[in-house]
Length: 90
Image (cartoon, rainbow, N blue to C red; front, side, top):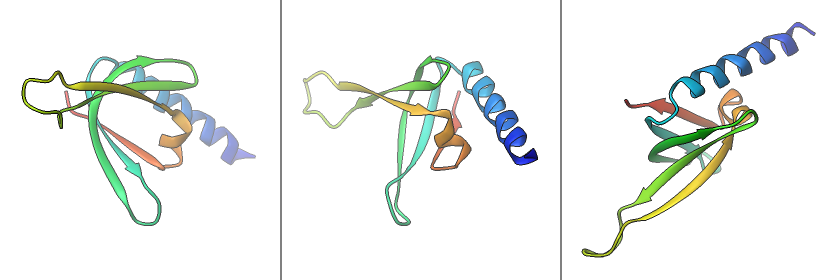
């Protein structure tokens, strides 16, 4: 029973930490299956009670074309279970 209380406390701390870094550049390390990871750099643009949103810019476009931007959402439980890791760069 105490593990549940510990997880709730950790989740609250994760939410507070992410909220404090809203608007900053972050690096997300995403798990892509067995022992494969992908690192992405983006801006933490919005924080909600159950998830947060990061905006990424795809700079792989041709010269002279505008860069494509897209957003992805993540849950706090992804961070708690260490499925995804977040690192603050600003």
